[in-house]
Image 1: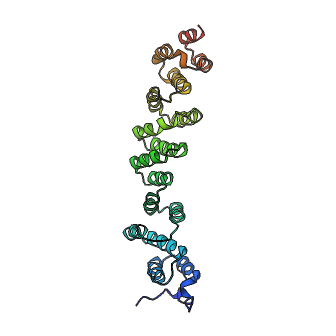
Image 2: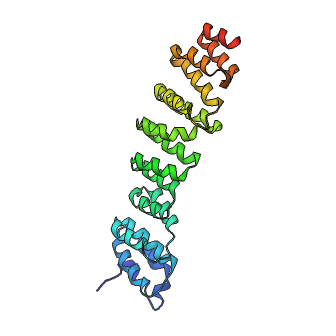
Image 3: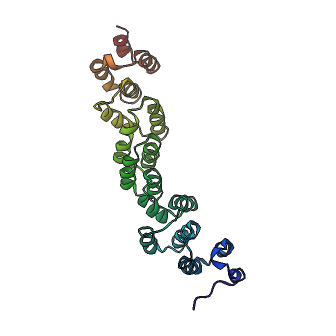
Length: 249
């Protein structure tokens, strides 16, 4: 017969099934999550409450019973999966959080979780489904930090089409010395349907600083799509006189 942990037993009485103190005591002990799972399963036979189901999901996660967790969430329940997923994420239980965010689904939080798990290809896939600048940037920057530049470029192309986001991406790469990867990103961005003046100008500025042999050709090919004053300033700083003359003509 199952016995409730010592401290929790003191709380059991005729209204046991509706007393949240039992759950709180089991949780506060820190080491009784296996007991809490058994207790909550017993409670579920008597009452149907969101708190009970929510705490059962959390207890499954804390005991690393991911198979039981997956089975439970695919059944009928009243658990607040988002709140549990957020708690698990904040506590560093990323694998359990991943299960919940994938089921909900919450693609942005799933992408964040997969980044923590270093599952970058899956994080990119989740970011594609979330499709918002915040998530794209988080995954992109994480990939850059890990040297996953091909995946970072997939993310980056979805960011730099927003002119307001371009400078942040460029600065992130440059602060870490990844100039070639950044130029590769911008070069790929030239062919995008939503390519804008900022991308053409940024690439020209990067050529002026890091690959001057490609600067003149770039200026000639895309003269009408460049922010000339910005490029003039950079060419003056880098002393590219021939290119500067071309820009002034």
